[in-house]
Image (tube, rainbow, N blue to C red):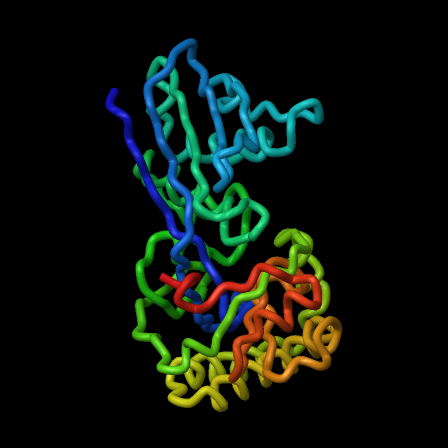
Length: 304
């Protein structure tokens, strides 16, 4: 068997976080960062798995036997990552059992972003496994990890997209979104890992009157795409933050951490973790550095 390599893009959700689960239309952007999956033949009816972080350090390695995958043998003695992998591979096996008819595999994953950045370590992996085994990535996600699936759409796409769920099925279409004011958009890493699963559970316990919220967010999504001026874009993002702050019963990240920031800050994805978007006339890198957030990427550096 020749070496096979698959690559999937990372993701950022600009509008529609949480409510995308209930059918809202969301603006999602694939990133210049992602993860590759390299598959070689192996032996002993097992997978020798090695995962590399962006600095080339190994952050996970283990042996997974075919029988663990077939029978979904997870236990507390395993590293959590191994159990997650077994769950994903078991679901992949249900969708395409033939891959366990081989002698074995040696698999490596290579991130091009630091793993803790939260740009889609899981979604890029799930999409690439689906590409490798020629199975439906959305089904693989749904039956292993759960989530809206916008991150899988980003993994597959090389341009901005509008994503929504209809009757629990994913729909997405590429759009033209390349704002003239993109030099005033920055992405700031907060270094506070958020669990998507926990964030979703918290949202599900609170989402009352969600239909009214969805139509407001849909309007914001389309108006955001059409924005010609920085101030209009900032206004839409601010509106979005206020609506979601109300739904989640959490103060906005700007109120909580950056009340003196001259500009607008918008949470992305699970509130309170990973990256936020900062909209500012002046380069805000110094401001965030002084606050203890040295990782600030420009739109150009981040977005595909």
